[in-house]
Length: 324
Image 1 (tube, rainbow, N blue to C red):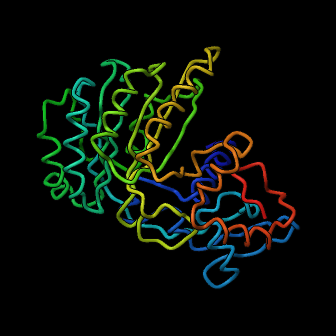
Image 2: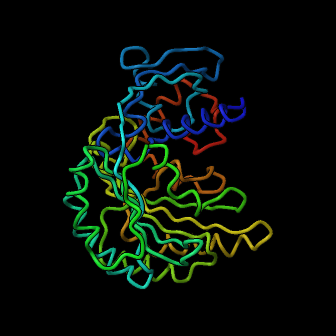
């Protein structure tokens, strides 16, 4: 592995963690930030300090959901979990069946155990064209997972059932073909209170107006252990993160694709909590102060106080900024 690749991995897991860290194993093990045991941080005044539950606990709380506002984290220590073979993959239906599939999923997902996370996605398959897919990941005994997933797999007439035992690294790459490097991407990530029939209609109808085959809409689940932590991450009561992705080829009209993504977000707004996942927001200059403040929710005032302690001059401000 090249040094550049190592740096990119560290940057990715660092931002993921400090913003919260929603993932496929979260139903059973919580957010990435819930599994952070300690961190070494270089503060705005150049000090290297250690943060955990006993040392600088205020900073440790803030690092787990407050984003990159408090210093440069140079070391993360995580709680690890043994993960074997997972039952995972894509279940794909024609886009014409999207409303039926999503309505069935809405009723079925209430019985989802912590070991299972499923993400319905409207996207364009490179070969089949527009589809509705349900990406599944079951983190438990394969035989039990087969039983849990049986109703979902029996519903309708899927054009592809790619659910099979696989390693976690393969799960992380399931959607890679749909979002290759090279094109431009713009993302929104509002949090949802619930999946309703009205929201399903909005998403399917808006997806039909997508400006590019690179556009996609996904429902990334929270819940399970992700609902039970006590950190700065403020979205414990949300049920899903609505992923709105606009993608287009370099040289195309960016404004048109971004406008589609924003229009989807506006249409879905009555069904959201009014806040977005901070890891899917741009800088304050792009989003506006109100949108940034809402992303930190009930944690904002406490985070602002901690910011004043560790970065009173707001050195770390080119981010989803919390003002001291």
